[in-house]
Length: 245
Ligand SMILES: NC(=O)c1ccc[n+]([C@@H]2O[C@H](COP(=O)([O-])OP(=O)(O)OC[C@H]3O[C@@H](n4cnc5c(N)ncnc54)[C@H](OP(=O)(O)O)[C@@H]3O)[C@@H](O)[C@H]2O)c1
Image (cartoon, rainbow, N blue to C red; front, top):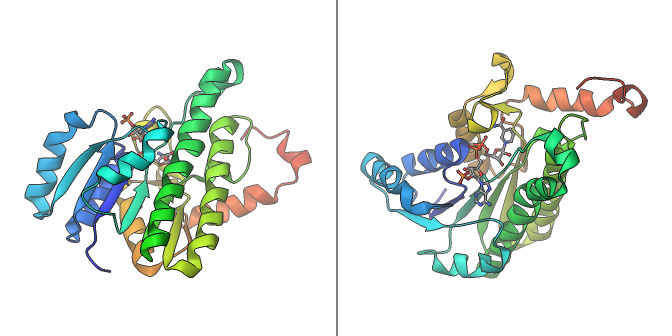
């Protein structure tokens, strides 16, 4: 893999920061994009000192769609790899009652990530190379009563990434879809997660670095999640309705 710049959208996320460290450790210059970017200087310096690579920070709100093109123009260089780690779980019960809360979850997990990666895809298409990594979720593989607002947005994002990959495959641009199961992060800190099914952010990051190098299309991070989701998807809807899952 050439040592081109790696853009991490949502760099404050536990997974996003781990991804930035993993690519920086391999010698890639890093572009960290996040909200309230000015508060991230210590993280930037830490990465520069540890890995001796160029690291820049950029203000970025995934919901500000009309500013996405200008955002790409402010980057020091067109990235070789763009990773989107942005997401918002929200609260399912609140999302059932308050449609603006539901809309925020839908836009943060689908509309915003899809539009910025779509624009980057167009730039990579013109340039003739590049890799896009979208972090979606197993939650998008089947609508569950307890998490379907978040899950449906992730389903849309997964379908978008699949279409983008198939559109750009002939153009030298690769798209990796990441479907993690449980990961121990700020997003899941209130949940009791089964240890054997729960990855650490660094594990997700290493799996992404490998998938980019090998041009893998879809990864579950822990392969057991591929099996779990095959079983969950095979349950007939009639039975699924009665399950607490
Ligand atoms: N943890 C899991 O078990 C798990 C499982 C499957 C998939 N995922 C996905 O993995 C990705 C990373 O999540 P994580 O677990 O590392 O959780 P996290 O630490 O909560 O990261 C989510 C990040 O999204 C950012 N974000 C939300 N809205 C944004 C906006 N409008 N503009 C810019 N950034 C915004 C947040 O920014 P702020 O820091 O500014 O709030 C935060 O840094 C997400 O896509 C998540 O859905 C996580």
